[in-house]
Length: 210
Ligand SMILES: N[C@@H](CCC(=O)N[C@@H](CS)C(=O)NCC(=O)O)C(=O)O
Image (cartoon, rainbow, N blue to C red):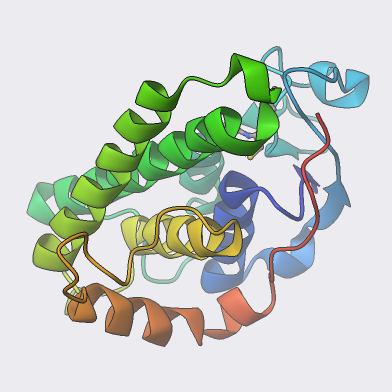
């Protein structure tokens, strides 16, 4: 299989960390692609009408895209412990956690448009502040609600890769709360997760090309 990837995409990294965690990374050839809504990448558009990575190319089968869907697929390729719990509260907790992570990453991308990516005269500060609110509220929610005692699941992978990217891009930080307090539980959980071999094997790097 080939994974259309980007070394600085949190969504693509989520998929690759997942692949490492379930033991299928050795079956995947990682191919870096630059993508941006302002710079069309024909090779990516040929596989995904949204022009976004990650995309998983399977021999003799159709491409799969969106990190959530690729993770679902990868979870069918192994016989070990499922990282997407099949049913019950563990499933809803894992998927809810993944949804928060997706939303944080999307808010982070949007925040960057309003701070560094858009030409200065087109930036809109209220929108930037609105996205910062979403990030801070999500960090607070995670500090209270992250099920750090549960077995590793897709939600944990999504949150860890999101937080790592938010820190890599120096976006509003998750360690310090706005009232000056520290989100110690979330920080400790992240630092422990970040030490896993799957995270160490997939360090983020590179700049965005718009
Ligand atoms: N919901 C998608 C988001 C993927 C995404 O936004 N990828 C970014 C890279 S971080 C991208 O390729 N953006 C190009 C664009 O927006 O045109 C997923 O979870 O895979």
